Amino acid sequence: MEISRMWTLSTAHITRETDKWLTEQLKEPTEGLTVYEKTGGYFIYVPKDLDYEEMNLPEDIETIIAFSIGCEMDWICLDSDGPVEKMFPTYEW
Image (cartoon, helix red, strand yellow):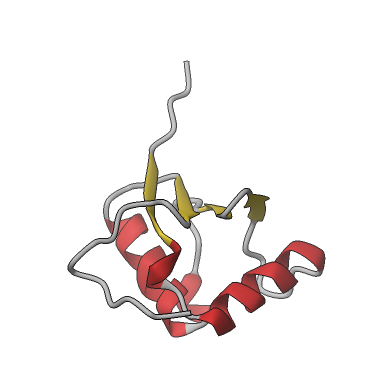
């Protein structure tokens, strides 16, 4: 049996520009990141061997991915109704 771990957090932790970038990744992935659209946000797959430091990622999403890898998460769920985490910056948009 395979069980995946997912970290859900608010889309307030990404900028409007990163939101647009993620939307572009849905249509035409340029950085090898697996992104799926969901109502009010995104699912992002975080493989254990993801070399995010070599990718050209927006800084906010790179920080979220780095934390996810450190916590051994398989997925990130960015959700407009997700929890706001005090240790990460938030952005108004």
